[in-house]
Image (cartoon, one colour):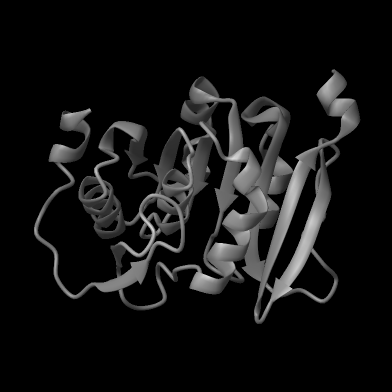
Length: 206
């Protein structure tokens, strides 16, 4: 595991900080890049998101797509998740995830893939299934619809798992799910929207 982080731990400058909201690392500060390229989830939304999953996070395997600073996955680890696989294409952001994981002493529960999400599916299938998948892509870029339509979610998610997507608020609700998924919950937080997708009963029984 140490080798996984060695190449990522390089000097960096001009970072901002976020705070872990709960769990064993509550109040600890983690770093994030400034600007909108890796827009971090707000503290209020992050706390609500994790609170809704709290009773199911124990030892969970999590996939964090478009990870940014890694705040969502690190928050889940603080609350008892077993491991997180981060996927982040920005090399500077990937280095900050590694630094944050080292600072919180959770390197042995973290894996970081510095790759484009759209090209990672074959590798993800070899590591699946996951209990929770977090997806927080740049707003209004269409990543959610493309991945919902093209990925085999019944092979990536555990039967009782959830895909959790943060997006810009949409009056018509969450993005339409493919036949293998259904919307289990959909909530608005200011200009953001949080939608939870579960496998359909038909998919779970197949």
